[in-house]
Amino acid sequence: MSQSTYLIVGSSHAALSALEAIRIQDTDGSVTLVTQEETLPYSPTILPYMISGQVNPERIFLRDGDDLDRARVTFRKGARLVAVDPANHSVSMDSGETLNYEKMLLATGAEPTLPPIPGMKDACCHVLRTLGDALQLQTAAQKAKSAIILGAGLIGMHAAENLAKAGVQITIVEALPRVLPGYFDEQAAGLVQQVFTEHGIRILTGSTVTNVTASKGACTVSLESGGELSGDLLLVATGVKPRMDYLAGSGIDAGDGIVVDDTMRTSSGDIWAAGDVAEARSFFGGKKRVNATLPSAVEQGRIAGMDMADDPAASPFAGGLPANTYTFFENRSFSLGMGVVADSEEGVEVDLIFQPTSMQYQKLVFEGDRLVGVSGINTDLDPGIMWQLIRRKVELGKMKRRLAALPLETGRILMSSMWR
Image 1 (cartoon, rainbow, N blue to C red):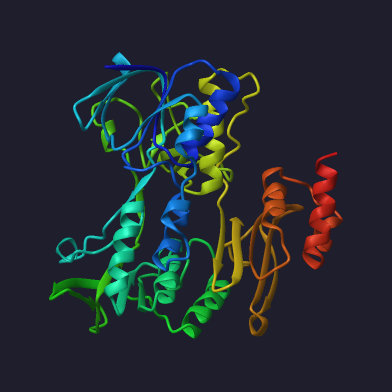
Image 2: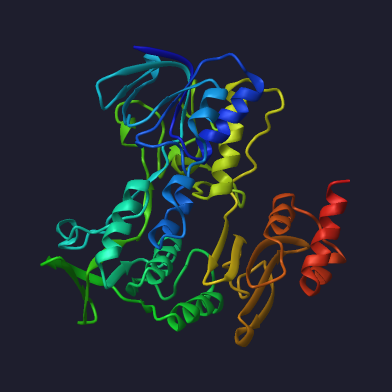
């Protein structure tokens, strides 16, 4: 039986951010970092780039063994959490081992979900969430001439681009009317789709899959429209869900994710949760939701670690603010906050610059004099500055119009004044 002052379950961004925060305040308390992966800590965001060979698998790790040794961490890999016993401050692992803790962070992330389509489970489909998934997909891509991707979110679009760069003919099937529906409105999504089409990638939006069959190493997808698609491999990128099956019988409150307060504490006193598994307060409106973005994972992990270590400088979570950057075929894009809202929505004002011939798109969303949403493709807007303007609820006043006209210059002026 192992005993730790701090037990961190998970090893990606939220977990490592918490580890750093703990060690700043507490240099002596014992820390055990547990992961179900068989590898050193890495970022899932880099996985699509492995498919085309752009990234060497040996260069994806966030920490190496020396880093963990310097942090005085006991690192346990290949260990899956299966049960939590808050009353006894202990957890059970799939090996049968019991680990005890004084304080614990659950940063177990999310796992792919398969849609309930007949034949899906028997089709040997691929998903892309772990390093093992990426390596399997890379191997399959080396033998494949064609691939079908279900889902046109960030994972599906990233994978499509990198499979295409590996020489695979791609067809994307998306049930909703546009690609990247959670990040861009119809006009911006149309620009993204145009670029993919120009690179030979076929995209079918508004298409529902009714059946999947597999035979002789190939997959056939039947569409509600009556058509069929065939490919050498099938990648399912239709969504993920927080991994929290281990909570059964624990009494810890959970909804769409593990419910936490603004210090990332769960309903069980000495247990915190952060990252893609946490259901925390939203920046807009305060309703709790899972905000599965890298910036939120880092911020939540830092807050959890500081609170676990009783750091007096700890401040409450300001709320999950949607934030994503996305580069596709050398084009830069990002979406922050309420960047998807329509200009017809009550209570908001939209300033839009749309130049499709030059592949430029810029959208600023305001509530009164405050910036609440931004999205851009090949724009001079600085995502970091825009994020700060939204997060700090800056009253723009006379700078509001100037921000739209001269975004880079005005953003820097505003940032300079904020940091004085």
